[in-house]
Image (cartoon, rainbow, N blue to C red; front, side):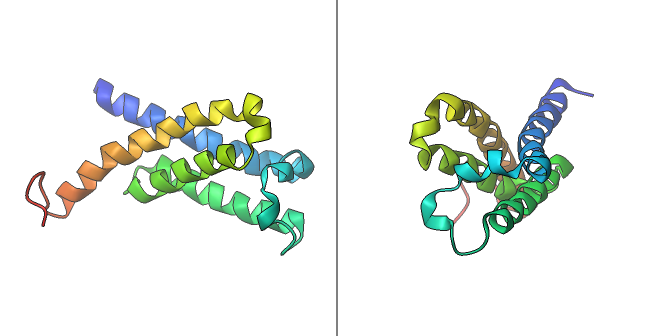
Length: 129
């Protein structure tokens, strides 16, 4: 196996772990996670419904990225989710600063896979219209 492939797999496993741990831990300890939702999204549904619905989205993103199949969009979504968590929780920055580093992983995967997916559909660099 070549080093580039190993690095790609390591990036996918790393981001998948970061997206699988919170929803699994929230099954046993939901109130340690619900506080990361901004107030403007809370109150429409019960907190646990919001938390576990978001958790399902995290699991889907994690498994999709882990699969390696057309990972551009779930990587973009993962990047946006992580950045959103930091932006909407400035008071918790001393804990969430790590999410900025973690967000670099799906961002890198999106950048890498963007070129791959464009080539799969017959586009090459410099010829798009």
